[in-house]
Image 1 (cartoon, rainbow, N blue to C red):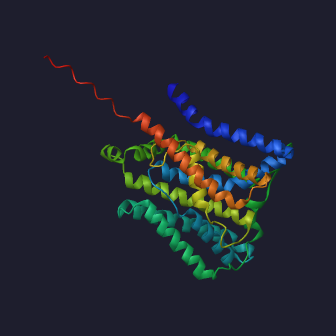
Image 2: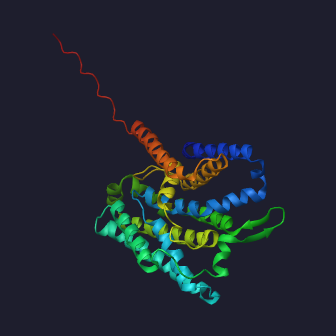
Image 3: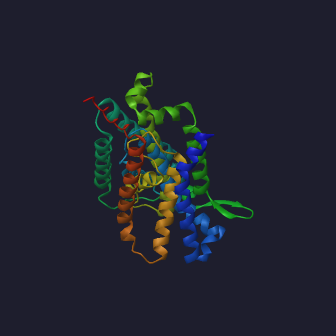
Amino acid sequence: MRALLSRGGAVAPVFAVLLVLLVAIAVVNPNFIEPASLLAYLKRAAPLAILAVGQYFVIVSGEFDLSVGSLVTVQVVVAARLIDGDESATLPVIALLVALGLLIGLLNGLITTRLYVPSFVTTLGMLLVLSGAVFLWTGGAPRGSLSAAFRVPGRQGIEIPGFGQVPWSALILVAVAAGAVALMRSAWGHTLVATGDNDRATALAGVPVARVRTTAFVLSALAATLAAILLGGFAGVSAQVGEGLEFSAITAVVLGGVVLGGGRGSVLAALAGALVLEALFTLLNLLGVSGALESTVQGVIIIAAVAYAARRVGRTRRPPAVPDPSPQPA
């Protein structure tokens, strides 16, 4: 019971912030509380929320993944070039994107855990490799087009009486959230958190730390693949479609209270952090604040969240006070 209350207390702040922001948006734009507007908000937030779930697996294990934004761009550009409007090519290309995501995640994990390259360097290098490959292949102007079937998950939905058209992306987000929660409540999820908290002790307990962290990178890359499919349908084909998403995902995760360095945090709170970020940008847009300030806002959030987490962890790990020496007899 105490653990449950503690967990609830850890995730409550981000949900409270989300509620405040949604109320603020509704005050500025009363139409926002209409089901269609709320579902449209979820549709926009779904790709980032899915990326945040993938990023959570990596961060809670004590690592970083800076390659997800460029991976999203590569997936969309490759899909458009290979499909080029041919409906029959949709499923084979989606299978190829999943295989590419698996490969990138596996490379990130193996380089980090087997070659002992810090994940910050590994995934930053992968970001540059993928960005350079896209530019070399497209010359900065993607060619081809996505098929109608490829666009369905990101653009269309299913009619539900009383709610209208519920976007597929919102339903996919719910499924991803349920799967992530189930995974984190499994033995593997407890092992992942233990790895981020103290990898040496976890290894001494017989846990294959390298395999656990590599799996986290693979899950992050698969989440990026799913986000790319949704963004391809929602936002279309662009060489900048995934630009900056890696920082948005990290911002969402730390906004959810997940500690950079690993070992602490809830996957639901990380997902809620993405919803908070999207709600904040929606509110700023309604207030007429320039979108150019989004990066500034993310930077402030990351610094503030990390500072808060560091103070919180510092209090819980503060060493015991050294007792005053006993008075010596004269």
